[in-house]
Image (cartoon, rainbow, N blue to C red; front, side, top):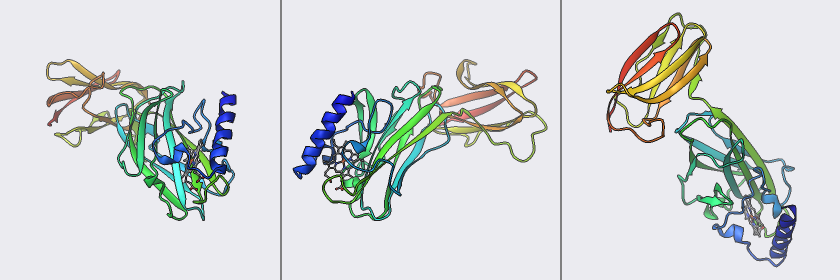
Length: 285
Ligand code: HEC
């Protein structure tokens, strides 16, 4: 592997010396250089890996809810630079691809679903924002996997370039962002709730997703489950022990397999060792 990289770097060096534009910068090929396990970075061909005064930053929620579509932004900054690029991939703890990247700005970003078995997003040449001074950023979305798959990590490598051909004056930066599934988010305020409560979901009726909140007066084993009108279990939103507190979760209108369910009335039930609460909600497409 190391050997291949050296050859690649040497070839790229020749391209740069010859003043040719490498395949990478024509905006169509993906080189798998995000710094993820088994990958090198843009510093194969560009200079100054994580040694400049700039930075690359991935901004994403602290946790994912299975099946959720989340907004992600990547930013690159380096004072005085004027042309920018990035590439990003998302992997689980075993370095396997996880979730799905959605391109929301096809002028500035592009997407490849399978390069060395992984999924990537990167800047297009347009998106590299020539002449944009000091910084730039790109936004896209990521769809979390339909089930809790444990730790998920975003890996990004980015270049802050100087518009001159060749690696001199270019800076390469990397960043990672890790998150765990947070099917249930702790929203406990300044005081602990006095009694068990299951709030009416909002919005209701809803399409495609709705929020459910509940209060736990004592630490309990909790199951929060969605049922259809026939009483059949549709999806478990949370199962496990939670400390006393106030919690929020979301149902995205999918069943346990991640498929969209049909319009209609559904019930959500909060069950603890001590008690139980049920409410009705309406999915209206
Ligand atoms: C295989 C070699 C290679 C790799 C790897 C590579 N590039 Fe490049 N890149 C080039 C070449 C060659 C050019 C054109 C010459 C130049 O401008 O330096 C270029 C130019 C660019 C430019 C325009 C810069 C300028 O100063 O004109 C950007 C932006 C860029 N690359 C971003 C990236 C990013 C981001 C990565 C990593 C995700 C990356 N490149 C990885 C070879 C590479």
